[in-house]
Length: 216
Ligand SMILES: NC(=O)c1ccc[n+]([C@@H]2O[C@H](COP(=O)([O-])OP(=O)(O)OC[C@H]3O[C@@H](n4cnc5c(N)ncnc54)[C@H](O)[C@@H]3O)[C@@H](O)[C@H]2O)c1
Image 1: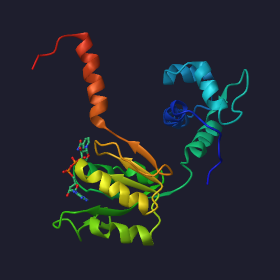
Image 2: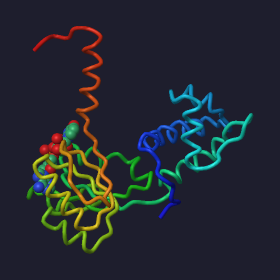
Image 3: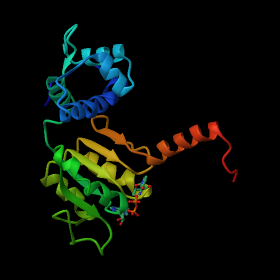
Image 4: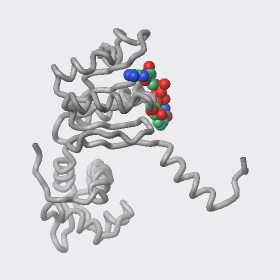
């Protein structure tokens, strides 16, 4: 288990990946130190917001010096939990499942794909990403015999809850849910929903406020 912090607001937690991304870019550019003001220009968060966010996790940076980029980057990686590895499985290996499995950066970041499950007989037994695709009927037995940290649900929505219940009963720690449904699982399981259409519809709203699009 990583270092335990007190109650941190989700708003702060959701900003951490952005800090991580910008700090990695700075490291790639051999930047050694950065002030909260400079970090503010890059990230779009205010300097005081950045200082407050980082203060939730410890004492980083020094007055008049700013932050040591490498140190802060490694601290943020630890805080996010990116210094660990996660056993990951995908349930539903269609367009979305395949796209996720082919994004090699996840593996590089420690999210190791260990299992793929689907209910399509044409797919079962075939190889993908050096893994044999298993029937979803094998999921419960697999969970009994293997520790799974993160399960990715990318099945059609109608099956997502049933699968989430199996994952929950099987001791999975977290679910990354791509199905457009709010899952009900026990409170000790963390669920992150990725609803691409929510983001697209937000963009649509912003565009519709700018000018008149073609009315349906
Ligand atoms: N593709 C996208 O851009 C996108 C965007 C947003 C959300 N989503 C959501 O992600 C999910 C997957 O979308 P997709 O485009 O990959 O669909 P898809 O039809 O290409 O793939 C779904 C896969 O799930 C499998 N499946 C069906 N029932 C199953 C079950 N009970 N157990 C295990 N596997 C099962 C199918 O055989 C198929 O391989 C959907 O819920 C969709 O709404 C997709």
